[in-house]
Length: 177
Image (cartoon, rainbow, N blue to C red):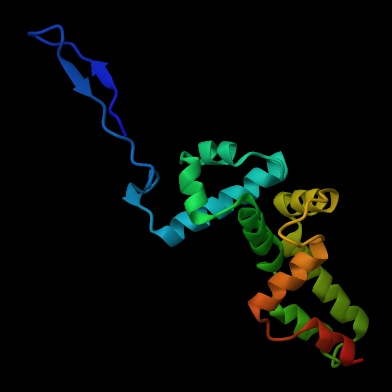
């Protein structure tokens, strides 16, 4: 990065210039330390959740990078495409919040069905009903863009859930009637 000259008062020459310190974008300004690549990726993904819930999926990655105080090429170093970033947002917001206990709760025959469903929905609602989740869910339903061959939100859930390897499966729920 080039350093911008800042004129300073001087006792001698009127041409004396003090150079501004270069801004290192890989330093976390809150803690004053460099972020590891995994921490940087998590920060970008977390900011993308908020950004896309506010601006929609048509929001520009350039704007996201500017909001983060990083360059767009740095953003693309961690996420090779906007679709990859959106898939990460879906993973974090929808799939990442799934609790495998809920599957066990639903198939537990020791409890009454109404009690199981009530306990499930109370727990589920407390996890998912956030402004970001609701906005992204609504925007995803309205957005008909194809995410690298994934044409619906259900397909995103299914493909992401396969990679997560949960303890139970939806097929098991259907079979244990």
